[in-house]
Image (cartoon, each protein chain N blue to C red):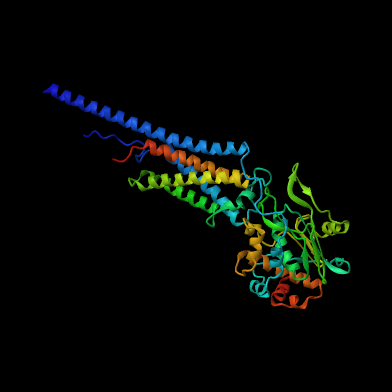
Length: 158
Length: 300
């Protein structure tokens, strides 16, 4: 007999729609990032994207902004979505440890800052848009919103 | 007694209701903060797009266009033999294709024909080893500097331009044709050099199957009617962000990745050119690096 309130959406029976959506978005992002990574290391010979005009994936993926400290951006994206996929698995939402939640939040914050940087580079430095990169950017923004809203809906641990 | 129990229950309910209301308020506040953060990010992205649409953005290339500095021309023609031999031909992926065709000549000398364009990033990459190789047989004057198109792949790749240049050699003749500039007018690159009818015929004939995988690619290089090649032998990405002077300077260091690619290709071109100059000059054509490169010709 106590006055505590039951935590919603954290029971074994129902995670709620946000964790499942986060997992699906992470897996889709992982697929697109894997494709971009493959294209990066095969010189983009089969990149399914127009290469003329404003939409020009090859121009973006071959630009000096395609690497950060020598690491291909595509590879960083692959690592990001691989990490988010692991952190979005059901056990990671159900655990009582605060770390998966903290890592998810840190991950999407870093991700969204990086996305803003890459959008700036595409629009102002490279003068071209990469369709596949834009899909990755969109998925990262969706992940950011999902994780933030989920954090807001979950009562802080007492 | 019963009244006291009821009072306690009512107090508990009141406290629980207050707690629940406080938690609902906290949750609403956190949700508003989260939504505000998402809105801020969307606003930042939208702001970037709007600023770009109303005229922001990088419009000019970084590397200079004009006449090549004497220091660049000098650097290309004074690469020590030790650099050629240290680099060798290890990094070379493709070599010119041997063909059976009438000898390509000009003024009684075997001729090397290059047809490219200033906008083309692969031409930008390939001019460096071409210029290094040719500089072992003669002297360039009025060599230009330019960069590939800012709106193509490998944008603004720094390079040289053969437009308006002359090449003097006792061993061979060289014709460098840059068909367009790197600037677009009404969606088309501005015309620059026009190949002679004879050079155009060579281009049309030997820059097509069965000599090449596909027809019409640039850069196209015909070495005396004995070898032809098309495309770049290394990635233009290697030159990204450099100036022509920095590239020329990098060629002094045999361990520099730019040197490894440019000099390895230059060794291959030198070996092919030696085949049309009857292995003259001997000090170039009999060097270790060129001998090793000659063994690789036509094997990839």
